[in-house]
Image 1: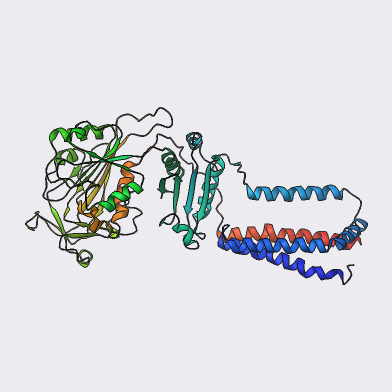
Image 2: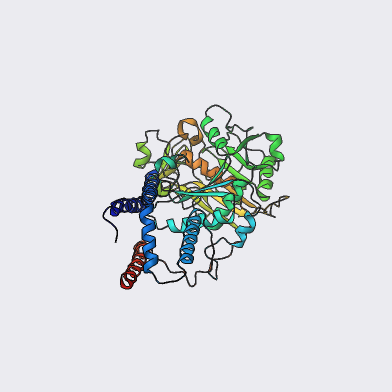
Amino acid sequence: MMQESDSRYLPFLVLSAFLFLTAGFLQSLSGPEAIPPKLLFVAAASVLVLTLVRAAAQLRHAAGRVRQLAEPGPSGTWLLLGLILMVAAAALGLQSIRFDATERKIHELSQTSKDALAEVESDIEMVAFVRDNDQLRLRVDAMLDAYRTTVSNIRTRRIDPEREPDKAREYGTPQINTILVRAGDATEVVDELLEPDVTQAILRVEDPRRPTVAFTIDHGEFAPDRPGFTNFRSQLIDSGIDVGRLDSNDLINIPDHIRVVVVAGPTTALLPGEVQAIERFLIRGGRLAAFLDPGVESGLEDLLESRGILLPNNEIIDEGQLSRALELGDDAVAIAALGLADHEITRQLAAGVVLRSTREVSLAPKPIFGTNGIDILKTGNRAVPVEPGTRTANGPRRVHSAATALEWEANGPRTPADGVAERPYGRIVVVGDSDFLRDDLFGLYGNPAFASRVFGWLTEREFLLKFPTFNFAGTPLKVSGSGLTAIFYLQLVVFPLLAFAFGFFQWIRRR
């Protein structure tokens, strides 16, 4: 039995255990990056170490008593084995090792991703913005762990924007349930949290080449370097886009390094030879952004109609309450959240879009074979088409489309000298307004985000990767949050207490 003087260390051992439990509980609530749990862990370890040092004599006495009462056996071997297991557990806690024993290998990256990412040399940062209490969290954590353990130069972290708003703001204003992928100055935001999308984003940011967007300039169009469009130009440059110009001579033979041709607010029609050059550019996988105002023939009407995009010479007047509430004039058109299509450009927009002097743009009722398009901006049901400049109604009040996005597979893949070949997709975005890019409207509501996502989609590179189709047959067992809590307490509380109680009972019985 311990002497009464020896029991004075017991409260310190209890205090140390209490601090460890409290620190673990706080860390489970606040996440691994929180400071208070770490301070409590340090305090608990300090109390434990100091107590063991002061009680060294008593511990030696207790160990001697145990050896006297215990049956002969390899106790030293068992103690050494237990110490090795404790050290191994601590090491694995610092550096995880993934081993997928499932037949379908559902807990690791596909061989397609492994092969594509094998040559990645840049340091990649992946940051997921997911709430701690979201059911998506476990799947995202597993995905981040799979990428981190597969590619040595990928660093990952997950942030709950509600619990850690300061850290979230370091990355701008991220959307919930997205993954930010960054390499140097190149950044991609993935809102489809699937392996193919994440792998494609890593390959895009790892490539140092910046996409070039070139604006036509010889037909009264605006160019980003002209007064009135400084905010738009700054956003393009901050997004990692090189901005160029195309005069009539350049437009006849568009250089290969141009990824997107932009025709923004022309006041006269493009020449037939220029339109034919744009057609050849699209055939080989180029991209076109057209911001066309009402009452002006741009010369692109026949080209766009051949792709299934209609441009009736109508101006849209929206008599809805939202548009009138803006007090920006009778020609203002407000696109509410209900008017945003389920498309990569508009899916994650947090606010609507404000246009002015808007032209009607829509897909043809019968799509062109091989194309895939959608009307991405739609007005409310109180919008009416009128003749530009006369305000004479051309039809009834109804929902009208103000922007369209279209894509198709072009001829032949772009095969670089090294790396993964690109998928040759041609893409077009047509918006029936160019005024929303001017400085006086660009900062309103969702206009900056909309413009950013338009050019993000147009400059996006997609690589020729064939990912296997996931077999959902025999889906693994899904455990709820309460079930995981029960498993946690069984493994870390109940089973250790039962083992301790059994050992204590044996010790009492053998005395």
